[in-house]
Image 1 (tube, rainbow, N blue to C red):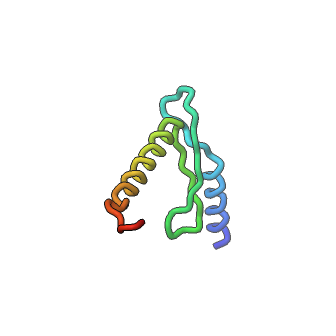
Image 2: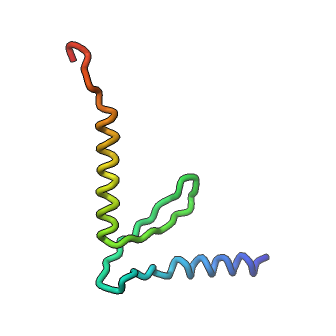
Image 3: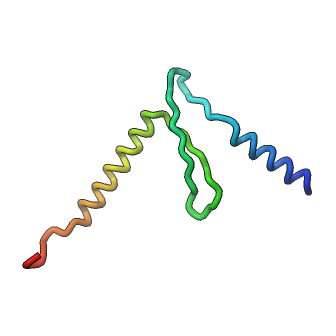
Length: 80
């Protein structure tokens, strides 16, 4: 049992130590972030190229703006 736990710990540390390779092989800058998946206390790491991260952030901004526009009241009560 202790060997199994030791093996899992060793594999877990080896997985954390490795860095994801960027496809394309050029001068690609990786942006990594740690997050906690819903319902989990164990953090995960995900990496993107700088351009992918910018596109993702732009998509999030567009989505947030669309939600805010949809929830904006169209009329107002008199005197407000």
